[in-house]
Length: 187
Image (cartoon, rainbow, N blue to C red; front, side, top):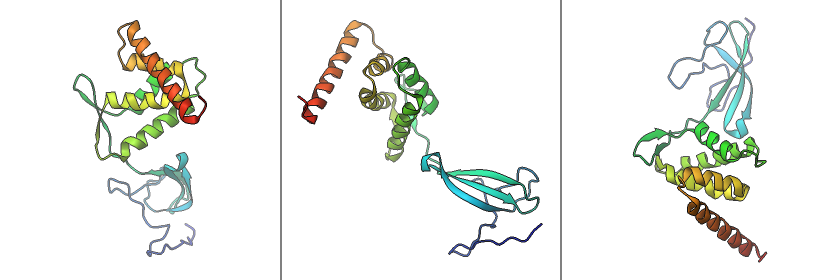
C-alpha cells in the first residue's frame, strides 16, 4: 500500500475518511471488499442531479466509480379505481412514447418533460397525487410540443368513448392555441 496525501475539509474530515452507505454499512471495494477508499475525482452527473465519484481502494488500489444522489420521497398515485401505486417514471414514459409515435418528438424531450413533472411533484407538500392531475400536467406540456401527441395522449388518459370526446378535445386545443396567439400579440 502506498502513502496517501489526503486533502482535509474545513470540518476536519478528509477524502480518505470511511464512506458509509445510507443503510449505515461501510462502502466496500468491489474487488477486495475492503472499506477504506479515497476519492480521486468528483463531478456532477445526470444534469446535476447526482455526483459521480472516482475512488481508489486503499488496500488493493483498485479504482471504481460511485454515484451519489438525493433520495426523494416516493410519490403515490391515486388511480381512478381507488387503488394506490408508486409513481412510475417508466410507465409514464411508455405512455408518452406511444402517444408521440411518428410525431418527430425525440425520447430525450419526453424524458425532460417527465423530469420537470417529477420536480414539480417533489416540490409539493402532498405525497399523493391523482392520476387525473398527472394527466392534466402532462397535457399542459404536451400541447406545446405536438398537437397530435396531445390528442392521442388525451384519448387514452381521458378514456374517450366516441367522436364527441375527440371534438371536445380539439376545441379545447384550438381555444388554447388562439389564446396563446392573442397573448403573444400575433392575433
